[in-house]
Image (cartoon, rainbow, N blue to C red):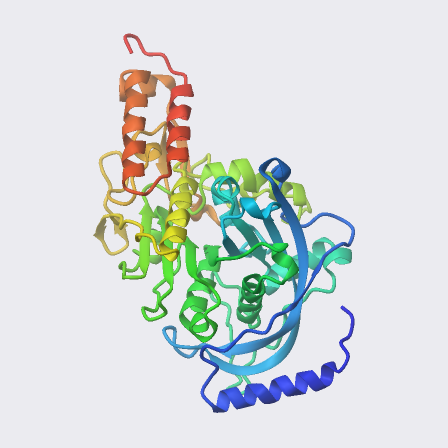
Length: 481
């Protein structure tokens, strides 16, 4: 990265400003500095480049280097404002953008995903799950490499393209000598600049003059993330958002919380059967939050993994076995010798996520709040109530779970990441016949459940139609059915 003229003087000025802010009690409501943004033109393709034919949707994908100077914060109170430690720490990261090429196609909303790094590389779980909604309704999506693990993996994967990137800074608090961001699973720790990086990217998007949006007029910005990223975004919502108010809403995929109640920012969180077991039931709904739990859902569902994430991760080859072989996400999970296979539940998390995201967007824009949803029923602490077939009671009930073609569990056993994958055991044609009596009855049940989900606001009409079409396309012949 080229040296900046007068950089040392500016760095000193930033440190002086930080001292003043700390003495004055923080920078509540302060403006966020805008970072420098330039397109990445080095050889090669981006890590996580989408395989979708974006041009057929009227979309483009672009990758940018974003650089600036970031603050470090300490978080003494999970429900209070962050305290500024110091400022002026240089960073450079990458931002991946997928947006409408024609401003007329843009609906005004940008979904900014804090990319997940639990596997040691960036993964765009939110885009994978909601891509049909984003592309058909004109959303823009931005993926931010906000954490060291992801940025360092980029540099290893393609040093020519990403070798100058860094979001590293000292993890020691000068006031106490303690770690600012200690590692605590699933958090990898040591990410002290990510808060400001994420704020500055959001501010650049909102400003409208940044190259990031290609001249699109932005109306709303939604912070989004999955799993570990929801934990980061919970902290961001509670401790950083009140300082700068960059984001208009938060969309959390499995799961995040509890959330501070005085930010005035709308939050929709979607949880799963797995996360209920791992972290307990979600918080109660409030005037600004809605929490849904999907019955039978694994941490990520089969469709989004098999149809999108596995092919992309395997193609990129950044995830490797000890012998150097490239791995898909499913390969990495199966490496734990999971107790039941095939892994991943067939319950379609993505369908519920799309409804939740669209509902949040409308809510932010002044529309009605998304409906509340029944929680997974509990038989006691850490024990979900299950029926005679082992299915959890309560939660968002989908056709995949209540008119199933497989046994679906949201949890599994084994080493590594097996617990989060769940599993599915497909029914044979004979089992389908015993359960439904015939295809006509099966399709009718699927249709009734999908229509009920649409009425409740948990499923969009497009996904309901696809669900019924898939049921009609399923082949099993029963005598008299």
